[in-house]
Length: 634
Ligand SMILES: Nc1ncnc2c1ncn2[C@@H]1O[C@H](COP(=O)(O)OP(=O)(O)OP(=O)(O)O)[C@@H](O)[C@H]1O
Image (cartoon, rainbow, N blue to C red; front, top):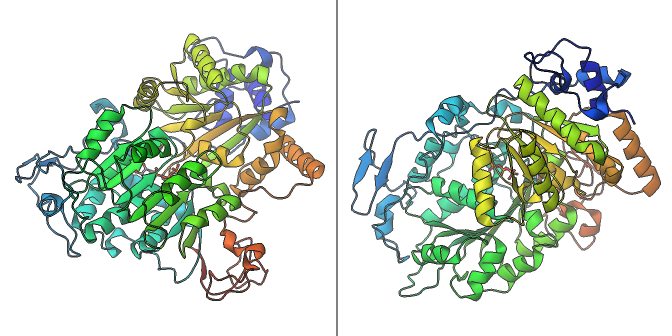
């Protein structure tokens, strides 16, 4: 079968024009004879190929403007280190970082002295805003600060909420009283205004409501659950004292599916909680438990954990969940799928954690299959469902390309792409490439092969020690090894600045996994490029992939549409499991007619869901009416 990529490359051999970083130019650059005097690289399987009519289509594909690479290094606005004695060092003006907020929030060390969590309050709080990255990298990226995020990219994002008495969204952080300390940290983070999911989710959570939120990858969901948790703890009554106990009693628990994601959430939460007096602790497997136990003994307000390590800590009675007021599940659909569900049920239903209704529960993901929603509703009380963004939440910001590549040609194609990127300088000097493969062995082998071929690469997968995984991630983030070969362990949640290109060397079996993988680029309003290698073995993905691409305004190759059509015809299968169609990464399963047959008691209106009568604005792909449901284009 002739492929657009192959043809584009063949075409490029006769083309002199190699310009900027568009996908087409990537293709062209890959085979250009004029590459700074070097011999043109043409992969063996493409030599002597004929130009085809498809090549022009390929080379006229929309160009991703990846020059505006993702924001990276946040420079601390100033440095303040404080201890309980109140001593402060500052390179800038000395500020009163411990002012109590108007809402009565406990701020900084003043708050510490009035609290009874039992850790050493004279401990010096490390400044989480201090940058690890070197000055050169900072100089290269400091034009990409968060204040420069292209919020226009989110302007026409559809937002849909359902549930009773949904609190209205806000437009600015100032409209919400988050307390002085948190507000100061927002300023330090250079967040100018909330992203759409934050505009909606923060008021809902601050109103004490349970929430199931589905929003695009890279759209700021971490903030959406961290801010309300921190703010609510600061406002709430202090935790009861646990004198002399070696057991930690966190007030909030944030669960995530991977160790690296837990580490990342912990780092973020520490920034937001800086000088609030709250302690954020992380516990995850693969790392020495003793250090984590010591951290826990010093007190914990917010515990970020992977389920396995948490179960271990619960069994050792080193953590008790009886004071949990806030429970957040990041990547909630993953946490509740077959792999994690038993552990989550154990943690949530079979420990001393207060039951739903007595704690506040927040579930977040970019994807929410209906069967997982159904299961998740066991953990929620009278919740609000929030959907932000288009199906799969891949956003139009990510240019998606699919190439037909036989397994035997994949390495050659990959080499081609990488040469093209390197030679054209596509995506900028510091651009990173993330390559997803199916197996751990495949990851090691590809990494080795890339290194042998002059492309510094590293790898992350489940067979590597945690130390190796963390070292690999550091090396990738710093640009020392600008190619990371990964299994799905790196697919969810990781927020790595400057990932300009995600390559699905092996496509996943599930379209949701594809959505999360490509979501490692094109984050926070920046653009990105995702290339997938497709062949017969991926036929089962053809339909959902082609639907997803269409819905994200991507050019779908003709051959992929044919695969999709053949699949639909052959299988007679319905729509993809995750969405049921429509424009969102997930829709409230409570609107299904099957759910409402029992009485529909989630809605005060109690009628019309899934029934087809439409009181909602057009464009929502479903149409329903009834109280408690709000649909709006924001
Ligand atoms: N209001 C804001 N203004 C500017 N930048 C923001 C804002 N909120 C979050 N960000 C930045 O956006 C990036 C993506 O955020 P985050 O990792 O929370 O996305 P996410 O929605 O959880 O993505 P994923 O679905 O992949 O887990 C982060 O670098 C974060 O610092």
